[in-house]
Image (tube, helix red, strand yellow):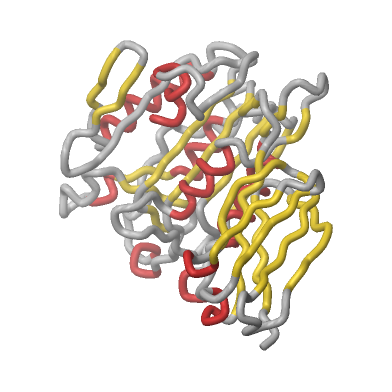
Length: 334
């Protein structure tokens, strides 16, 4: 929510930007040990907790506004716990409050989206940051099938113009986060939307971020974090209909750069550098870790040297750096 509101609270801040389709409203809930306060253009607001009842109320208010105009772009974001049976179930804060009816405090997001597709005539972006691990115990339990947030009337046709569903992980898989930090998926999503993806618009003055562009960027950013097979995470994505931009940026997207030198013992001895096609040079001491920076899209050369000749000089020439990320592990020849 902070990201969406940032430019309204502090003009020029990184956040939601789409001139033709400005931010109209936000419905937000949060579960945390302490109350969550969000700064808005009219002052600080304390969010209500993400209980099942509050989720239902917020969803209905949100949907009524999204469907009020066929040109609207709706965004649905959920971050929390989820499980997969036949459909994807998401858990509210008060899930399990009743031992007799624990699933009363969850909801079926799969059928919720089927219902929305029959109401929303504009564009919809759905971001689900939750596990989709399969549970045999749940599948074999009668009554373990929570309701959707809206009844699906299959007699009504699907009318949605554009839908982008970008989920944190695939069916049967886990989503990961480091305790106390933003989850891997949400970090990738916010990075991608904060100026690290986009294609030049028709009139050439904006860089548009639509579902396909955003999905590709999130995949690449997540893939860069798959350092161990045990915590490998791959985003599951479905993009359909017209390509309706979620964002229209006024500056060209940037590229996150990560240059490494292996083996790690050699990195600490190295002086790494990056040279743009225009001759601009950046240098980095390998003793400080991986060489990380942000640069405009373009062609670059890069390399590494050892002041005391512990390895041969390295040079990689004329590589195109394309948003959102360019990561390259150089190999020292000892």
